[in-house]
Figure 1 (cartoon, one colour):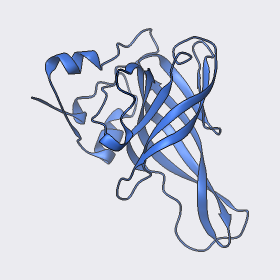
Figure 2 (cartoon, helix red, strand yellow; figure 1 turned 180 degrees about the vertical axis):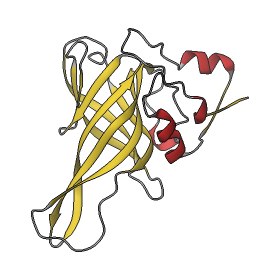
Figure 3 (cartoon, helix red, strand yellow; figure 1 turned 90 degrees about the vertical axis):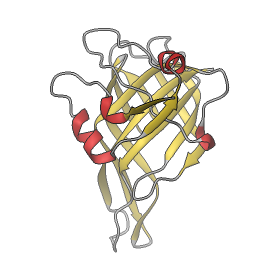
Figure 4 (spheres, rainbow, N blue to C red; figure 1 turned 30 degrees about the vertical axis):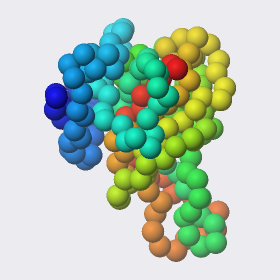
Length: 192
């Protein structure tokens, strides 16, 4: 078996992947060389970066036969929480800039992802979750709406993996107050 650590993820020129690796730590992905080659989408275009796909917990694996069409890491991102009942709770709203194999992606409320290269847009809903201690959970999402057929427009599922940070702030707050919390993750877009 091939034991690849996430610290081998390649990123080019000054993009903060090293900080993500340092924050999240190493993750082991055990696969044959053929499986590794099959799940590593190529970076295409001057604005693209290679991103390895990490191991995926069984609870959130994409459908059997799904093929990765892109992998992206959070270059900068926050999860924003709203205070209700004196605490920050409930669903958060993402605001993030991703970079990866298909260039840059803007991730925002909906949840939605839009390519800045070709404007392809997808919206998705959560269909699976895997908890990670001290951080927001890893997710499997199913695409519910799409626009355009560009770099992400043909995706059917999205994985949010290797999460770091992003958890709701602790302590009392004033109802209606909002708090943005930094987070990191790797997003993989799949076509079933």
